[in-house]
Image 1 (tube, each protein chain N blue to C red):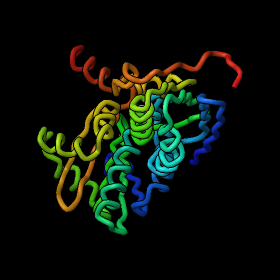
Image 2: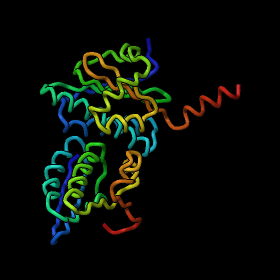
Image 3: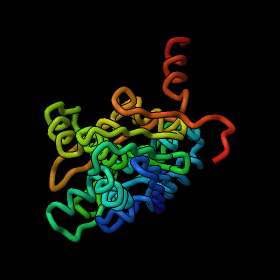
Length: 110
Length: 157
């Protein structure tokens, strides 16, 4: 019932790996960590969600906010490694058509 | 008098760290009832959304409140109630106090809760919201195929 956030930065590429659950408890920590990183101009932010076992609207809210900020600063925002469950969450809320989301590839090594 | 269902109630402090505790309990109850993995995931999201709304509602008003979560375990369905006024409720009478769906209530709630209520309504089979001394979200999930079976029986006889 916790969330770990690992960030790796190389030039303008920012890779963020999330592991655990994103809910009302962990979402504020996620927002506080990644939102400031989205302030930089022209950043490419890639977030790996393959280790996320649970997420609800609190997580969607964080990603929408960060996505909007990255876009406003001329950057690129991408979510990778979504499980079927997470993919569905983005689809039913209509966010899959707005944000660049990518499914987990079967058998892919983490 | 024996009630036709089992009832489980939990009371948590109105703090976000306890929403995950409710998910764990819910998983256990839903799994025991025979819900599928996908249905349990849907129940977890819907129930968490309702708890999150209740917790954030208490936070906004700067109250040290409690959130009460009631699970009604019926043979064909699970009913989940989430109340933010912090008082234990009489599940039986609270169920009867839920009137027809009020469209205007729902929209008002949606504005406050953002995507939360939309997800609840999408993932559950029936949702009612009752506003009286706080907000009570009342939602139902039928065991897979149960509604179809009932219909089929009606048709065949």
